[in-house]
Amino acid sequence: FLSFPSGLYLYVESSGTTAGQTADLVSPWIAAKSGGQCLKFYYTMYGKTMGSLAIKMELSNGKSWFIFVKSGNQGMDWKKGTGNIDAPLGVSYRVFLTS
Figure 1 (cartoon, rainbow, N blue to C red):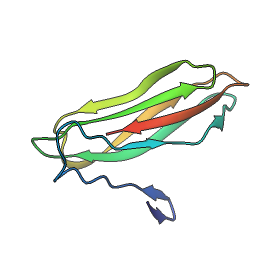
Figure 2: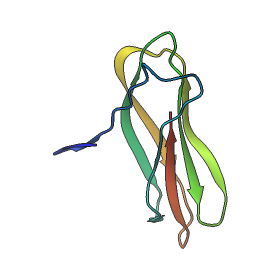
Figure 3: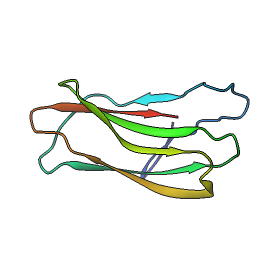
């Protein structure tokens, strides 16, 4: 991770890897807030062998679902991604990023 005043930067190098390899990032457990939250991030997925980027939300009660999924070449430019984090009060959640 590289830390910047406005957030963090995570870089996953995909060249030189074999098909099927993944990079996973898992957040700590976070207490849900009233009114929900929104995950905002930027991503770039460029190249003919580009895999996928998926973000899944898991609740402490065992329920989970994807809040963002993209696959394949998305072009060279950076794109803004968002995902709604809607967890009921009293339940913690964590976010899984898999690429």
